[in-house]
Length: 139
Length: 139
DNA sequence: TCCATATTTGTAATAATTACAATTTTATAA
DNA sequence: TTATAAAATTGTAATTATTACAAATATGGA
Ligand SMILES: [Mn+2]
Ligand SMILES: [Mn+2]
Ligand SMILES: [Zn+2]
Ligand SMILES: [Zn+2]
Image (cartoon, rainbow over all chains, first blue to last red; front, side):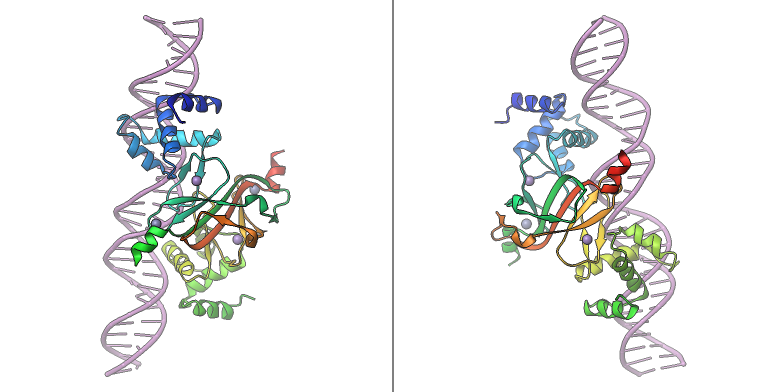
């Protein structure tokens, strides 16, 4: 459960001081696993926190990522999307509606050739295409 | 060999009329497999074609991609990079120097779960980290 | 309460990309 | 060849995500 207490604890564990803004931002992305962009988060939270600044959303997400609390998904060409899920999984983006979907794959079976001596910090498996809903709408 | 004749033929095969600008742009990315961005290509070709417009570079690369002659690599957060290699391979970007390296992986062994009914048009396997050269420089 | 520090905010700057209209080039037919 | 229409290129302005930065506000301890 992502109660306020749990979120506060989680932020603290990642060395992030739990301010109201930070709690609300983490609450939003952990409860809405839609890989939201900065603007989506901002437009939603401004309803609750009328003084919220977009800069705070930018800074907070950058901080969360640095502290390894969330990850960024670089699949949408125009804007960075964010993900509270931390387990290894891939992302599918629909080029019609822009929705991002999670998928699983056998990453432990992947053999990489040509990166000896390279230090790996992050892996991303991205797929583009058309989601079932948009496929139907086109007919 | 990528002679001018071969490039002209290749463009024609992809239903692209071979203008001087288009030939030079394709020649550059096929001979410089460094996954250049628009600006890199522009700065290099302006030396040969002083009237070249950056808009032409943008338009031409978009056209090449649409006609399936090249592919775009969405791994650098700030700009789109382009690749003349068309065979399946992955990309490693060094977060220190920004260089992009190719690598191979056993893509035929990958089992994807959770994308039934999804229409796939493009796959991208991206890895971030530090390249050997930058790792040495840091010591 | 007072003060130092951290966080948030608002605005301006930056930079990649796109829109769009004008100009130039190319192809075609009289 | 010359006239004309279509295609390609160019230059500039607009758009938009992100960052820089300084001022304002909030927080926590002496
Ligand atoms: Mn995800
Ligand atoms: Mn490549
Ligand atoms: Zn869709
Ligand atoms: Zn490097």
